[in-house]
Image: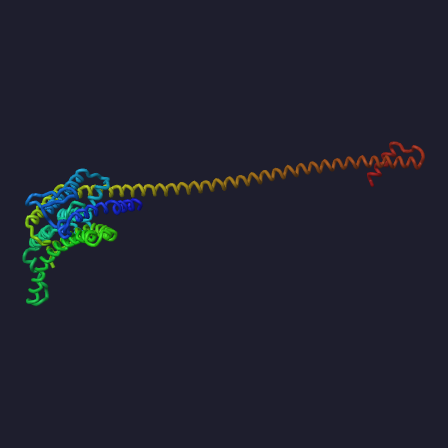
Length: 281
Length: 160
């Protein structure tokens, strides 16, 4: 209990103000608030690491969000590769933490939805998806880093991947004919049946689209909310800081929860969509 | 702000980075983790089994100990009872012996007292006979009483 208090005290007293300081600093430096906001959340070729450090200009085809994707992949790969070589029978804190993420995906997402036998085959995919999204989401909360999942192209690509897998798995496991037959409701007339089948077919696409938009919107909105609170200091008055900084700190903490939750939601829904596509009705 | 600007390059790189990560995790990390987890699970199961076995042995030992304690208790009770009986017998024997000795002493004392009383009576009678004789002499005024008369007066006293 005492340890939790110390951690909370450190987070609220040191880390959050420090993060806010670095978040807010570039805003003060910008003349245009709108461009300050957009430069923080949108993709671009310039990477502003910290205030007073000149912006790093990335190569033409290399953007900040792409860099964040590389960092995300590298972080996960390095951590897990290093850890997988040093596994022991009596695990330490790091091993428990890294293992528990995989176990969480296995026991709370994949196995309950797909069953143990099928789930074992799909575990690497969903573990990768969850870790990828979780790290990409959380990395954006670190000052100087940006949220790649706050870009619709990234979330869209992942949603398209899930959509393709839905069709591939469905066609492979139950066949093309049965896949489309599942869309047609039994016991209805031809006209209504075809209409419902058409809607069902559309819903496969919309579900995936919603996956992409939900994640993108949450990530984008979270950062915008924090920045909006801080921008009030410039727009209204410096004294607004007494109100907007605590609100921003609260939103920042809330954002941590949302990042985890969104990674979970995306993975869980992907799992459900792919699993449902391969089931006979 | 162009939130929905299409960047096909970023989308393709997303698939590539995801694919690379998937390959690394699926090939090197997750099998190792699952294997390790299985080993740990087996280790925990075997430890639980061992614990259950030790617990069972402990229970057996406890029941054995209880049995031994019960036997010892019964034996102790028996010994206590026997000792009490022996003690009682000894006490009764000693009491009887003491009683017997006391009655013997009492008898002896009674006999001795009887003897002493007899002797005293004898001497009293003799003295009474002497007094009678002396009184007779005083009355008669001369010594007429010889040994023979004294004997007669003693017999008379005895008859009284």
